Length: 542
Length: 76
Image 1 (cartoon, helix red, strand yellow):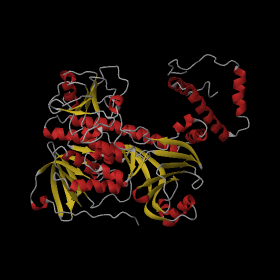
Image 2 (cartoon, each protein chain N blue to C red):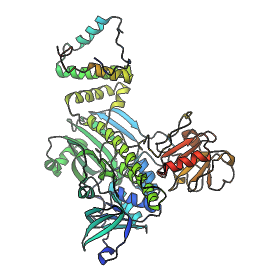
Image 3 (cartoon, each protein chain N blue to C red):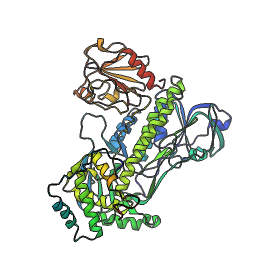
Image 4 (cartoon, chains in turn green, blue):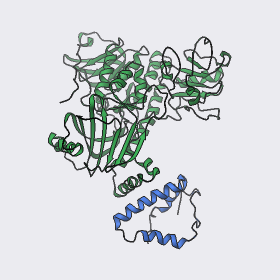
């Protein structure tokens, strides 16, 4: 069963078992999507890490398949996003049906001039494989397979971790322990930390199949389709011509019965007709919960991704939020380890990513309530919305089959400097993710290609005299300048005028961009003092 | 009693022929069973809510329409 060949990654006897032990700056538990992303983002800043995983292969089953634009932009820093786009299915359109009639069509990225599309569908095992390839090629990362965490002992200066291997048990000393070990996080259990939230009882059946016919690229969602008249069905294409079919089963389904091949085949036969043929890739019956830890940072142990928060799958907010967590944490943890920021900078990881998790849970719970109404009036309004959607455009906007992941806004973060100027027509405000746009240069064609691992000031200035003085360690990117750039600055051409448009980039306008490509501050014409103060604040010194 | 009154919701008469509209609403439910009434009302509410558009007025109406905890007038 399955077209993907699961490679076994080699286990190597850890040095600690032979008495060679040292304190590691960062130990990451879990080699899923978040752990290797974090390790690579730390390595890009010169910080070594050890990644522990109890298994020795990638994710079993396709699992998280919708890789969002903002995740691809993170992975692009490691040179693997191009591979993902090439292998995966780029899509941006979706169709929602009521019974057999289309009622709502959406297009997620109607705007040109971005390096990456809204979504690429790629099975989680490929994402992990590409991440592992990069980790294995990186000297600063040690990936330890078949290393299972069985004990965690937090101390004031470090965390001690007990690890079980095929050759026995050893202790590992970490300045910082980062738990990226998923919804059933061993680290969270070992520290006996609560994971409060809401349990949902509706059951869903995933049937990943290879169907011998032309496959649609867009996402399709049916309410009450003729082939599954009591519930909803989601259809989504993945790499290798694999189709994800997701049947809502209701609360009373028997998962063992539903998983039987003859029962899965019966449902698929109703859907695809008597002549269709297919091969099974992966079958799974799932329910879900929405949960969030009260704090993501506990002393020197930090929780990332599903270990810290879980949502329903509607909206592709699980894996993509985990990647965003890792990207938010990496630069902060690197600065704390280098001593260039106080440890309190990590508090902003907790506050910013908890706000993001709340937003993700809110969105996915609203989708869940629409797809699986919990009480009769809720169902009545859902069905009323569907009934009106064909004739009334406003009702189409209310049809909620999943609000797909976009970068969350982090308003009011202590790292941001609120707007002082009030004449902004457009452009990302402090707390928002940057907007990509084409730029002309021989190094790369988009803004995101020119943002390094540190802070960047993006300035719209025709002349060097209009540039603010750069604080130490901050890169300058100037747009609209002819001729050579002054020291510390790189000049880029606004190829299609979209940068100026998207950033409301009047002469003198400057944006302070964080290492995770969020806007920390912006001005119409900053002087050296306000710029330096904003950088200090964004680095946790404020 | 509408504790969340912000003044967005009109309280005075806004209908030229009030009896006619009132009876049109009631009559529209006449031949419907309970389930059909609920579906009809849900569609009607969504259509009117979108037409009103004013989120403050809608929230105020939601609060005003809730059954009161004790007695009058909704439980009488």
